[in-house]
Image 1 (tube, protein in one colour):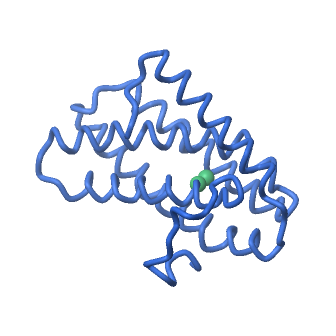
Image 2: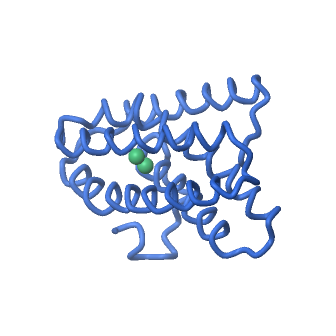
Image 3: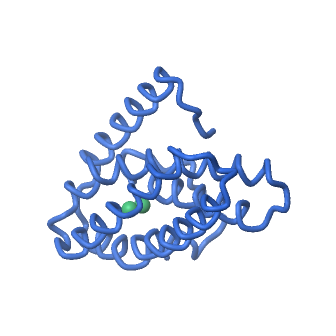
Length: 168
Ligand SMILES: [Fe+2]
Ligand SMILES: [Fe+2]
C-alpha cells in the first residue's frame, strides 16, 4: 500500500537487495499488466503472447517465493505463509497445464481466466495483508534479498539455456 502512496517515488534508487519486496512488487505489476492485456485485447496473437509471458513470469516468480522468500519470512506469520503456499500449489498446477497445451484450444481461455482471477487475488493479498506485517517487523531483509536475486538470476540463466521463451 505504501508503494502506491507516492507515485513519483524514485524506486530505481532503492537497492533490490535491501528492498526485496520491490522485486516481488515489480513481478506483480508485470503480471497485472499482462492480465489486463490478455483480458482486453481483441487481437488473438497479442492475447496469446500476453498469456505466454504471464505463464513464464508466474513460473519464475513462484519459484523465487517458494524457494527463498516464503521460507525466509515464514516466522512473521506461519499460517498466512502456509495459506500462500496452498494457493501456489493450485496455481503451479494450472500454469503447468496451460504450458503443456495449445493456447488455441477454447478450454485454454477458460483456464487462463481462472488463473488470472486467482492470481490477482493472491498477489493483492500478499501486498495488502502480508507485506505491511513484514515491514512492521523491521527484519533485516538483506540476506533474503541477496538470496532471491541470485536464485532468480540462476533460474533465468537455466531457462535461457533450456531455450525457454523469456519475458523481457
Ligand atoms: Fe505468491
Ligand atoms: Fe508474489
